[in-house]
Image (cartoon, rainbow, N blue to C red; front, top):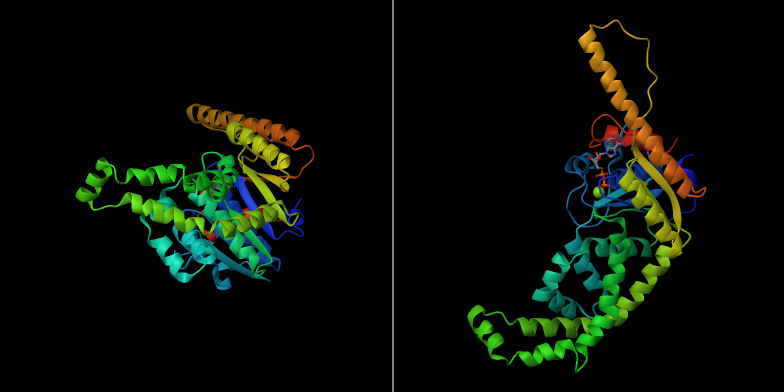
Length: 356
Ligand SMILES: Nc1ncnc2c1ncn2[C@@H]1O[C@H](COP(=O)(O)OP(=O)(O)O)[C@@H](O)[C@H]1O
Ligand SMILES: [Mg+2]
């Protein structure tokens, strides 16, 4: 089956899965293939391998998709357009503030705030959160036929789904409101600002942490409605039948288990699971006629063949396990290529496998 069939009618594709299985590679190859078939495609990559990024001509320029020069993609011919970008979480966060702040001045105040600067770069899950924010931004204009989203190199595929919820609930609800209540944490911290320890700290370091904190939360407090609205829009977008989650895996036991679990979570959450891709499958090779070799070399060849056969068998076991768990949902296989996929010819080979 060609992945093009799976993506029929989709406006958004999210490539999720365990770390290192080939999410970025697959996202790029899908974008290439769909652009070749005539769509105007934007692909948002996250931490692509440096050589892949330069093969595509991706720079950390403006945190917006750029049109890839079709000449770069020869011999592949594009009927459509390929736009690609590398996600910059910090800048995406800033853009989000610009979009939701009631005024430019308010946005400046927030972005200059010390707490905000820490939060927007260091907070766990900021990559996940900003990936979703970027997806929302790119889909809201209707400019692209298809947006392909790569997902961050989380240790766990589920971090990706959790992060926006964690951040949303932090921004919209509980934590923030509790903080802003007169009897809440925030006010208690503020009351502490007169405490000798903090006063001394401020004198010595010149940092008025409490002032920063209170400014931050007051400013954010004026924006919760905007955040709420966006959170609901994102939720609708992710649940829409025109969106699709592809779960990427490799034929090893752990990523396979993670893929099964992830797919279960998507289905449970009513999110549109589209199919699974098992990447880096070792193709079975037919043994050729025995070659007359010196005994020592012959033994080595036999040993290598034996080890390879074990890999092929392991792959088959994982694939069968995934296939059963998918209950008839589509499963695509992509072979292991010799050498990393860091240039265009590698990417084109992956594309060919996906779009057969
Ligand atoms: N089918 C494949 N054959 C060989 N190498 C691959 C294949 N798919 C991916 N790779 C390599 O595996 C590494 C991880 O791929 P990547 O797409 O960055 O994974 P992820 O985004 O899931 O972390 C990269 O070095 C990539 O070139
Ligand atoms: Mg990646």
